[in-house]
Image (cartoon, rainbow over all chains, first blue to last red; front, side):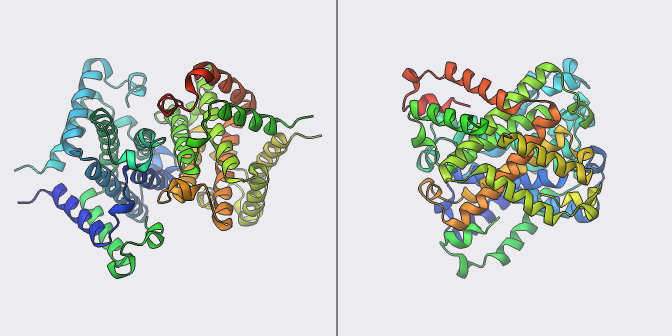
Length: 117
Length: 117
Length: 117
Length: 117
């Protein structure tokens, strides 16, 4: 069974190779492309209330999904080009966060949470 | 066998629930948090040449991995809270991109690629 | 009388020249630096309610002012290096916006405003 | 003689008032709008080399000017709504930077400059 994330990585890599686009994919350029896509996610929410952002209509959810997908493609490409195992790096970061934000101290706290990044 | 991305989603959801942080996780707020993390990726590359960004030392690669991880956590959370299947949305977006950027027209072309987003 | 914005431009240009930093100030790099600073503004507001963001305490206002200043410095630098008259460009853009968003159609409308960018 | 930046602020404030848009202009929302515009600046440069970004053609310079203008409008609005004097805050920040990056230590140094933000 092929893991879903590896299947996706393989498909994106093939997409890039077929078009000979790896030459443009320096991590510097990919980081720029990723934040541009992340901004297109932000754009959907900029004039919405928080409550409205929790209750998207089907059309907006579809569009947000497309912008998340674009952001994810560049995130995977940066990891690929830099030789970073994204899944492993994310588990390691959650381990760090779990130490930094112990349950008993942070539970329900906005004040503590403000420092979470 | 548990799929890696589902394992990660489950772990992040549990992390948030244990701290009772879902109340702060409106898509609006999460989109802001995601772009802040994406900017921390950009920050590593802002004064580097493209060539240097392709040849990171081990320490910088480690740090970039941590910022990618933070970006990924918020990306997964937005998808979760909005009820979006990120893997499916990403395959669908690559299908769209494949139509928009046919291999024979785009191969090696920066000009075409400029319009790719 | 020296105009305040020209006085500021002159001071920033001198700051850069004294440090011989113009070599690093390509518009590409400066655009990255500007968005990193804009993200530091966003970071202050990411977990705040809209209402709280309208009522900052003195310490947070001071910090937000510093991040706005950093964003502004890079904005002025991009204009400088690209040979753009920022004040003139901004008046021209407001002229365009005034045509695009006529008062009688847009007044108090969130729906219309959503398309304002 | 009216100072150019005050003339611009007054014009933007009037634009917002005529449309009754101040209700949407919480600092939280404006920070999101500003980073979306900053990303549109970044988008112009994401696949360019640094050298090309220093030699824009007239059409691209015009477009970059429009995106800088949009970013500037939101920057001025955030300062306005938060009660921050942007010019004063920027001079104060440059004073801080001058202490942090003394000429004799930073001259021509990328390494030092990397820490400049």
